Image (cartoon, rainbow, N blue to C red):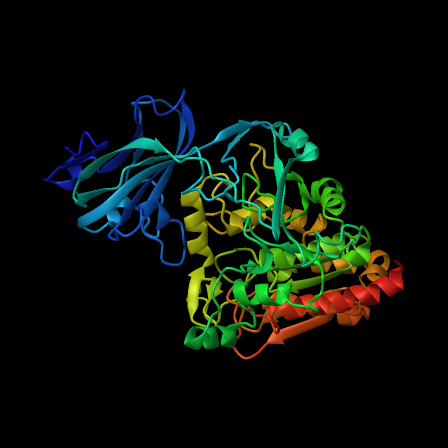
Length: 550
C-alpha cells in the first residue's frame, strides 16, 4: 500500500530553506464528515511507536511535540495548514522539530455551535460523556499513524483524517454500583441544547435486604469518571511488597481492593458513596458552582440531581446525612458546597484542595501581582525569575505558569483547551465581549486583568474571602463541619492558601480541623485511609443527628 493511498503524503523538499514552505496540511477524507467543520486541527510528532501519538500529547509532564490551529467551515478536500507560525508545545514551532524519523498523526477537535443564556453565539468542544479529553472525544476525527522523515530545512506533510472516534460504551451496573444519567432542565435551558448530569452510586452491604432503611450519603467530588467511588474493586488484587510501602510513605490511601474489603466487612459503617458527573464544554468538571460561563451547575446538582438520588437510593434528606469529600478539584468543591450551602450539607473533608484564597492562587497573588509569569519583587532587578506552577515534593521545579499557558493555548484558543488554568477562567471569570470566558491574565504577556480578579473574588469563588465577608451569616452553620488535609510540599503549592484559611478560622474563632503532612508530603497526601475516613464520617453523622434531630 502506498503512503498516498493510506491517507498520508510526505513531500521531502531539499534545498535552501527560504524556498520551501515548511508545513503540515490536515485534510478530511471524502465522505468522512457531513457538511463543513469548525474546530481545531492538530499535528502530533513522536518517536515512540508503542501508543498512538494523540495519547502522548497534551501533557505538561513529558508530552510530545504537537501543534494546533483553529479552522472554520472546513470542507472535505480543504486543508488546515500548520506552519512555523502555528503555536506548539513543548517546542514553539515546527522549526524546532529536529531532523529525523517520527510517527505522526493528525486530529480534528470538532466544535459545536451554541448560544448560551448570555446571548453570545460561540463554538465550543461539546463533551460526549468522556470528560473533555480532546484526544478521545467521540465524534472527533483522526488520521492513521504513519512513520515519516522530517527535515527542518523543508518538509511538507499531508495528514488525511480518515476515522471518527466512536461513542464510549456506558459502564455496566453491578450489585454494588449503580449509575444514573439525567437531562438537566436548568442547564439545558441555559445552554440552549441538552445537558446531562450523572452519578455513580456505591451501595452498602445489606442495602437491597433492608428496603425501609435510609442511609447517609458521602458525595465524593472530583474529576469526571464513571469509576466507583473510592476505587471500589472487589475483584481486584491486594497490593503487596515494595510498591505498597513506597505508596504509604506518600499517602495513607489504600487501593480499591483493600477499601472494598473494608466496605463489605461486618461492622463497617453503612453509608452510600456517590460521585457526580458534570462536565462542561470548558473542562471535565463544573467545580459545582453557578458560573457566568458554565451556567447554574450548583443549583442543578442540589435541586435536580440530589433530590432524585435521595428518593431512588433511600438517602437521609437532611443536612447531617449529606457529607462531602474529594481531593484537589474535588477538595475545592467539597469546601465550596459546604461554605456556600452551610445549611444543606453536614460536613466536608477537603483533601489538598485547589486554591481557597486567591491571594495565594498557587504562586500568583491575583490582587497584588501585576503579572502571572513573573513575581513583582525580584532579589535583583536585572534577574528574571519565572513563577512556578508546580514542583516535586523535594522542591525541584516542575512546570512554570508560562509553560502551562503555552500548552493550553495550543490545545485551544479562547479558553477552549480543557486544562486547569483555562478551567479557572471559565468557572470563576466573567464573559468576554466575544462570548467566551475572559482570562485572568494575557497568555502572551502574563499581564493580570484586575477586573477579572475582582470578578473571581466578588462572586464567591475566593472561598476565604467569602468566609470573612459572610461569617456573621454562615459561621454558626459551619461550626465543626470542616476538615482540611494537605501536604506541606503540595506539588501545586495549594498548601499556601490553606494556611490562610486556617488563620481566618482562628481569627473568627470558628471550629474547623486543619492537618498538614510533614515532611515533604506531596499533592495527594492524607493522614488516614479512605476506609478510616468513612469511619470518621459515620461518627460525625451520629453526633450531628443528635444535634439536628432525626
